[in-house]
Image: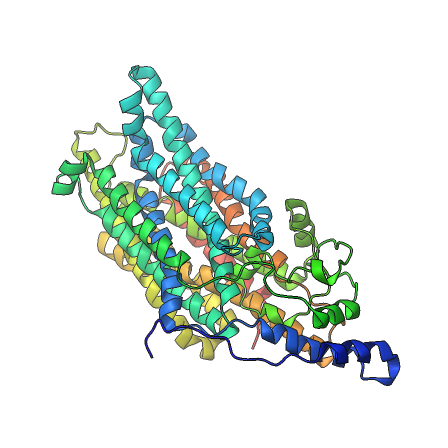
Length: 557
């Protein structure tokens, strides 16, 4: 069998609808409502269980993560020199890192939930993925070509500088916004079209391709394209990098969109078994369940689904929970309300995730500047034709190589995690990731040697792989435990709590961490008078997260 063999769903047998309804109408002389629910659930939800997917299709589906991370790496390597080259004052630089996460923190649950209700003939997720992909391409174009475009249109020297700053900043914000948001629909698309076993395999390929994409992106950024044949042909180094980025993103986005067919919303017929489930539904109010609308008739019923963010980051099976009510779309207000009332294990997970991302972003957003000033002892404020400035530029280039090492180690560590999991468990992996990163960054800050720093860049990849996988796997296991308790009768009866709000809250911690770093780290650098505070802050936050994990994160088998 080849890697791209066509997938076929297994045949399944539905129970007789008339028998279900008649048994319900007969009342207490028949089996219990729970037995009837189990019978109807097996037939109805077994019919829509996605088929198993081949390895080739899962890899093709994950190629979009390679393209996204490639473009992310290009942005991380060149956002500082591009913004400074168009004349952006350093006092306004932090605004670039603040605008996108603020918008993301407020709008992510709303836009993520909206894809659950998309009725496009192309499916629920792919229209959103395509739209966000086009926005990424537009942002990348403005970011790397904004100065050239403005120079060709505007002739006035003072206006040219102002418009160049505006266009480039808009490109950076647009790219960040779309690149952050696209991850939710991408993984929701994976979860919609894959069985439970394939979801875990698909997430593994996503993590692997994310690391490889970042490695190639940083590799392109570390090369000197200005004096190459392509540089002379296309005009400048930035145009060469844009060419590679646009080509990579366009090809892999297209491959992703056609990797696995997606079933449009509303194509699943809801006949008598669904009606039986409706009649059996309870109306208990649980944490994580949003305000409920009145029940509709069978013809108006929509299939149950988590929000896009929930489906993107949890590996629980959504086909096992019956359709009992139609929920309203998630809003920012409902997200905040749910975060306040969430159980303690989820709240602690959000806090540890916030600490981890704050530590990681402290280091990653300013690492190339740290290499240029502290490790290479260059001066970014010196004259551009001076030795001190050339030394700083050399340090920035070597910093790109260090970030490339980080991306490769992230991809490799995704395999190591699978080997360590049976021995130390999810909590152990979570602790190890934070501890290794905290120890490595503290050594980099205390002993800023070139060779040692490049070797210790591998710990960045350990932290990256940990943050992208372990917290969401913990959420999955927490929900699975609760589901098992309900089935055994030891937990609460009634409908289970959805994963959407939990994962939306967890994902929003990334935006909150970026807001904290963008608003506070610059002030810390000014107070300390040295960029070395960047890695020291990262180490401190990571070790605090280590302690928090050891004390407050609940262990799961």
